Every structure is written in structure tokens, then in C-alpha cells.
Length: 358
Ligand code: SF4
Image (cartoon, rainbow, N blue to C red; front, side, top):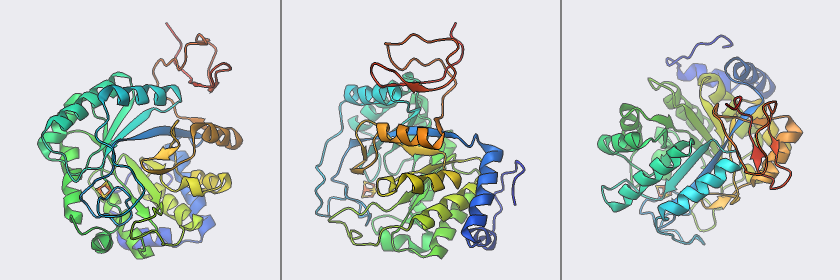
């Protein structure tokens, strides 16, 4: 059991398998202990994910409704204006998010005017004091450096699944190219957000292999999203069975134990989970969710912020706070004694705990 503060990068597959295969309640107990050693167990980071360019993607990821080749209901949308994105980021901050992620359905970043606009978006969101994350497809080292210089905090590039199963899910690029982009991101000094999806038809062995790849990186991804497949009509995986909640919990708990210092993000699939099921995910070590005004996660449904904050109250969770002075709405002056979070009585925006004002 790993309850002392030691991050290991030398995990073997057999070790991870032993952790993963434990009786579930033992596994959750161990993960909860690890979680308490490394993190405040009742704090959960709120993140907002905005699709800044939607659909029309040339890739063939079998789970994705944004792939141009599948006949889905998703409307193609060109790159949003920078001002629109900044407005969404401001709103996300008002609603309590400390991280704002921008996603573009591209195979790779190209050195063109769209990339210049992404750079402007990164700068604008960074100026708001939010952690800025992007997911834009494959990235060269030079492009990563430009993003870093603009203030990018994190780059998301999921492994999706194991190396062995990768070709079953995506044929238009290789697993190695994912690793290469993650390497470029690291070299540029940007933090890494990388995880995967369960429910793609992979085996438990594939899930363990994916965790092994992440947990043996020279530096663990600071952020590890664990997604349950969102079955999008018109994609090859639309008829896959719904992911079993206990599979999700097992995956989160194992990720928490083998990458103890990382943020483990309970990502896609929450819309199909009850509050009780999500509570098990938090107990197993998840400490971040995606939420926001739009009630979408890219192109699939997601609970809205009001529903999430109700859940937080029921479970005694608090939104993780960036330690900076934050006034989330103009209706209520900061009370120096205010040391918790609550909703403003006039506009329902989230007021965040802050440092003592000057
Ligand atoms: S997951 Fe990303 S790369 Fe794959 S089809 Fe969807 S938008 Fe394109």
C-alpha cells in the first residue's frame, strides 16, 4: 500500500494488474488512502471545456462524433471568434471553474492564421487567471513552444486506449504519434493532460496497459482524464454497451494509486451516472470534473453547473480554489471573514474563497 509521499515511475504491469484486480472495496479503500495522502479529499476542481472548432475532422476515431466520415447530428462550426471564447472563459470563471480547456477538432495544428487565433485565445484566457488547456491534435515542438510562450498551462492529448488496441479504434494515426506529441509538450514546459476512454471494446488487459504507459512516463501527466464512452449516434461504437460504473470506479482507483500526485478527472460519461455513482468515483480518488453553463462536453451532454453544485452540497465537496483574489460577481463585496464558497443570493454565481483582500 502506498500511503507515503512517493511517486513511482517503475511500475510493472504485474504490479498494476495486482492493484486493479483487487476486490473492489479493498481497491477503493487503498485509493481513498492514497488520495488523502496527496490531496484534500473534499476538494474537486471545476473545469470548463469549450469546443472552439467543431466537427469536420479528417481522423477516424471510432468513438467521435466530430469525425467527418461518420453521419452524426453534430453541426460543423468554424473556429470561434476570440472574443466569444474569452466571454465563455469569463463566464466559466464566474461559475467557479479554475481551468478552461479549448478543443479544436483538428488532426494537427498547422502554422496558419487559425493557430495565430488560438495563440490569442490562450493569451486572453491566461490573462483571466485561469489555467489554460488546449487540445488541438498533433503538435510539433516549435508549436508547443509558441503555446507555452502565450501562457498555455496544459495540453490535452489522450492515449485513448492501449497501444495494442489502438489500431482497432483509430487507423489514421499511430499510438507512437501520441507519445511524440506528449514529448513535445513536455519539452516546451507545458503540463500534460493525458488519459483514456473505457467502453471502446477493450479488455481489462488493455486498460491496465494504458495505465502502465501513463504511470511509467518519466513524469506522470499532471492531469489524467478517465472517460466513459459517450455513445454518439452515427459512430461505429454507437451500440457499444454502457460502461459499468464499477469498471469506471476500478479504473479511477487504479489511476489514483499509480499516479498519486496527478489530478484524476472524472470526465465523459457523467451524464449517465447517478449522484451516488459519481460519489463512488470521488471516493476512489477522482478530484476534478468538467462542468459549465452549456451542459455539454464538446458535443455530448454533460450535467450543468447548478446540478453539480447541488451534488457538491450533498456530498460535502467544495470546488477547488486557485489561491488568488477572486471576485466572482459584482453583487457582493468580499467579506474578509468569508472563507468558504456559496452562491450569490442575487445572481447564483459562485463566490469563491479568497485570500484576505488588501
Ligand atoms: S477525437 Fe479528435 S482527432 Fe479524433 S476524430 Fe474526434 S476531433 Fe478528430
